[in-house]
Each structure stands twice: as C-alpha cells, then as structure tokens.
Image (tube, rainbow, N blue to C red; front, side, top):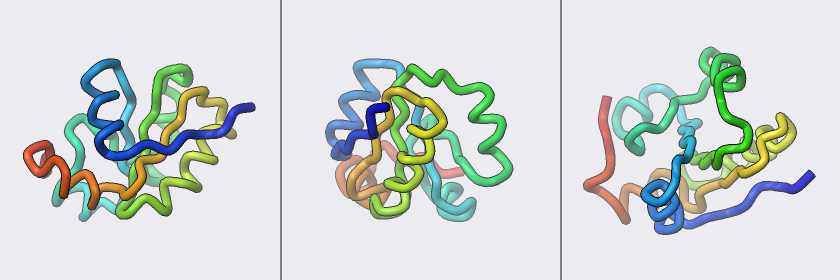
Length: 107
C-alpha cells in the first residue's frame, strides 16, 4: 500500500484550483472557527465516522493541522483506511495563512 505524500501550501493551492480535492482540517473547533481553508471539512471525533463513510477514497485528500506535524499521523491513518491519494500539507494552516491570507474563511 502506498504511503502519503507531502505538499507545500503553494502545491496544495494549485491542486485545489486544478482538480476536485477533499480538504480536511484536523485542528480543534475553536481554531477552525477562527479561520480555515475554504471548503475544508473539520474532522474531530464526532465528525470522523461520517467523513469516512461519505468520502471518496480515490479522490485526493489534503490534510492540515496547525504547523504540519499532527497531519502526518492523520495521513498515516487515512492511508490505513484505504484512501489512495493522501497528502499532508507542510507548515500546516499557519503556513497557508501566511501565503494566502485572502483565502482564509472564518466561522
């Protein structure tokens, strides 16, 4: 089974513009409400089962956390759940926010 791949915020941004991607934010609820990537699903213990049931396991899945560390273990988890195209965004949301401040959605 192939593992996950790393990508930069710039690569993630390009991928989101060029193809349908699933994007998942694995930070806490408060942080997600303060700001997140538009159309990112917020994954936590309550939302994860529904996401796993509804997600397209062959569509690209980009995961991000605060700084790109926690998303590494999350990427392993999704590979183990038979997702075939998994990415962990290096630098996490903080790197995204610095590069693309105009593409941060609150609420």
